[in-house]
Structure formats: C-alpha cells, structure tokens
Image (cartoon, rainbow, N blue to C red):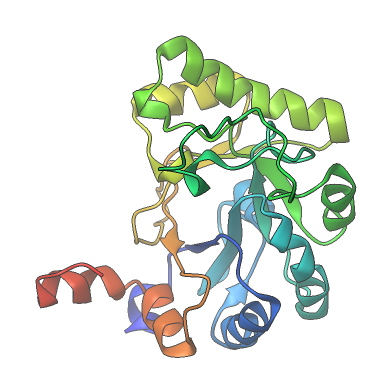
Length: 242
C-alpha cells in the first residue's frame, strides 16, 4: 500500500521532542523504506524521486539538541521550526503550563525549556532552522495585526540573530486559514506547513503542505502505519480517534 499510494507523493513527518534512542530507531527504518530528503531540497526542486520523505520538528525544545549526533550519523537534514521569542531564553512554552495558576509567559523559569542560541547555531550544522512564530499563538484566534506580526517577526528574528536563510514557516498546532497563508506569502516565506495526516501530491499548495504527526515515543509499528498515511483511515474505520 505504501509503495502504491506514496510513489508520487511527498511525505512530511512532524515530531516534537523525541528521545535520541527513539529517533535513532525511527531514522534507521525511514532511511531503509524512504528516500529521506530535506525540506529545502523539496522546495527548490518540487520534483523528487519516488518515496521521498521529510523530517521536521516543531517548537524548538531544549531536548532537540541531544538529537544532533543522531541526525549527523544518518546524514538526515531535519527542519526544526522554532519559536523565536522562547528559544534563547528561560521563558516557558505556554501550552506546557495550561492550568497553572499565575503562569507568566514572560517569566524566566529556573529550568530552560527551549534551545539556547548557542545550541541553535550548533544544530544548524546538521539541521535546517526555520520559523514557528514568536510565542506560539493559535493564529486563527489572533487579531489580523497579531497574526501578521507573529508570522513576520519570527522570520526577522532568525535573520537578525543568526543570519539564517529563512524560507519556511510552520503554523502552530497546524492551524491556519487563508488569512495566515496570505500573511506567510507577504512575509517572504516560500512555503508554510500545517498538519492533517496526509501526504502531498505534485500540485500541493506550498502554503498548505500537510504533515503527519508522529508521537515522540511511538514504536516502529506505529511509525510504519502513520508514515504510510494509513493511520487516519484506520481511525475512521474503527469509529474512534486515539
């Protein structure tokens, strides 16, 4: 089924903070079953060999730094989408503190949750660092002014602080409307990524690229089924969602 349905389609996976041992097992399998390419390669070429797959990670967790040697060992170039107002600080990711009384997103926490600037520069040797807003708001719930600024400022931050060539944007939680897609175009991004459990065909909209979410502790069987695109179908057939 995988070879039949994914032969002419691009598969993009999204992780968050998988342990190195899990990432190593996953890459060992993915490199055997797919042609793992970088997102930049896809955007520049648009036509790729059959069975192409891209690995991405969202948010910019401090734990991502431990994956550096794993990516280097497999010669896989992942795209890590970072929240520029949180990386390089001790501020927390607000969604990790939902329900906590008195949580202040501007407060510096004792334990760093996000990558430091030095770690980002180091990771840039094996990964592609791209934009994921400043503070990770749910963009469709923002005012037009807030959404536009979060999208554009994230790109400016990466340009100014690191000198990166920023061409890709990931919608927080994968949620977007045509408004956010238009803001991404206006900010100068060449593509924007959502989620949705599907692969991308030849005529895929570059500002609505679909990604398949892989849980950070998924086993190999779950990875195979999810990466194949069969998982959403199994959920529908079973009549329930995990």
